[in-house]
Image 1 (tube, rainbow, N blue to C red):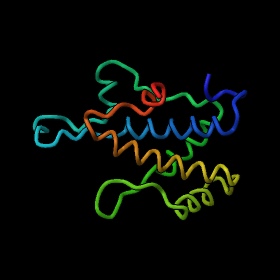
Image 2 (image 1 turned 90 degrees about the vertical axis):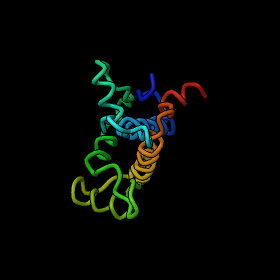
Image 3 (image 1 turned 60 degrees about the vertical axis):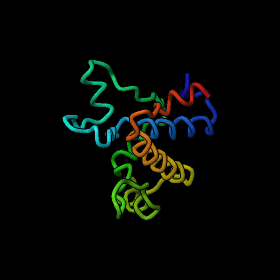
Image 4 (image 1 turned 45 degrees about the vertical axis):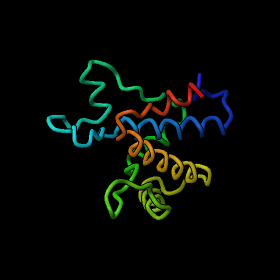
Length: 140
């Protein structure tokens, strides 16, 4: 199973990045354009729960602390012209220095990649025809 102790660091990092991508996709609100009248602004995750289903978040095993750190930092920030962008290095540095004090270089780099993936998931998830990132990975 992915995210378990026997996996290489590279595979764990890829799984965490995919989990962040999936979380962003689930946190997105579908843009129905002009046909949006009467539709709610629920996120994809809320739509799953409304249908009585658990949203398909990914199990990342031992690396889940990095996903928790990303969510606590605020996985993305608002872009000046609207939408969302990934956290900058300065944002991550400020979060890390004010909370845990320090992280390994690879953890900081991974947090940045996870933030980029989350931002991509938010953008992609707005498309009503978008396929969940985890489903794309399984098919590929």
